Length: 174
Image 1: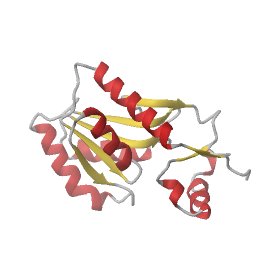
Image 2 (image 1 turned 135 degrees about the vertical axis):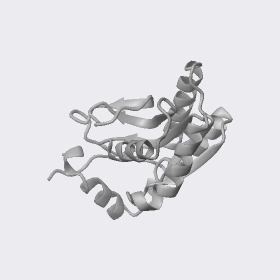
Image 3 (image 1 turned 90 degrees about the vertical axis):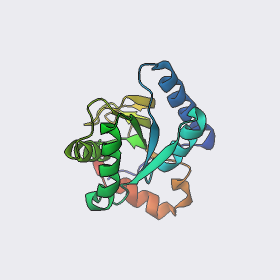
Image 4 (image 1 turned 120 degrees about the vertical axis):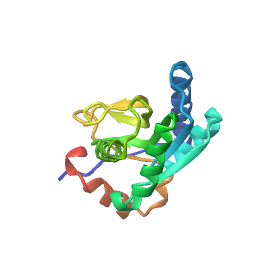
């Protein structure tokens, strides 16, 4: 296996990406969320920034362990909000394989979330992902871009932990 290319996302990059998402949301006058939902773990910080950029309140759902059981109560409550007429924008750092977004969409559908009431936004969107997002600040094509993006909050981890995360799905970086 080749050595991964670690590409840092700087704080300035993060701010620029969040401003791009806020601008895309503002341009979409026909769809405004009642809440921004940060997806734990990687989407929490971008969601806080986007909440400040847009003035919209933020909620969170923890899916960092990829455990539906731990997220089930929050998802059920969020789905109920959509049935009551609220729109929700879920935010994550990257849509790479689409696994997280796909799982959350499935869980929301199972809980009866209203059609058209849920959208997703990411800082980085892989056009080869199994899932599409409505808002993305930056696009990549994983058949071309094999970099492992290191967001500012991830840079706090030891290099060995970052390398282990990158190695979890080798085809993304090989």
